Length: 139
Length: 143
View (cartoon, rainbow over the protein chains, first blue to last red):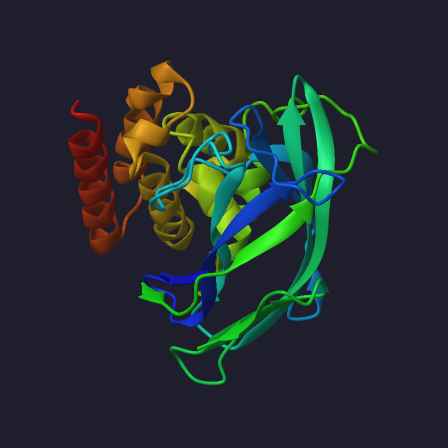
């Protein structure tokens, strides 16, 4: 996982996370045939629930971040980047991210995370954590 | 960018949900994304979300169509609104190789919109910002 840029918006954090897709027996699914997708809902920014939610599947990659791609790689891994929120002042934001694998026209949900992202209290600082317990970063 | 730790998060392939969607077919003009960005970048907030950055980078000229559908004539004459939308336009063309639809790699609609805006805002600095954005878009797309 990397910290990723917050150009022009110094409060907050933006990260790159590499995921590995596993089967139900916890074995890596080494296939490039999966398309990682996400949907973001329940965005609450500084206590205000946002009107526009995104309950539709969108491709996670590719993005300008190096290593991102439309499909999983040969090991069944993929990057989600950029992920996070940056702004020009202190904030607290929560949201829900679902990740699915689009495979032969069907979305298989593989992960649901409740995220908490903060910016501040000073410029250049932020934190991000999920309720899955495997991401808890600050800078 | 600062590398702090290499982490692979493991996820399990569940077979519970099947929807078969690969895009937001109920929002073919990406109005939801662009409206959200306009609101989050307005009033000096300048809130930038990773998930919308991903989507904006794939829009290209579709961002111009979305803005035309979203903005009223009065909003197009408001210097602050125009200032707020210019970074969104830049994000939509910053990486032309990521633009999803080939025809959206040609910024025809967006340049038309920006040219209209430059003739309808009174603020000199905003007009200059618009001209710089037009130059940026043309340089990025080689047009």
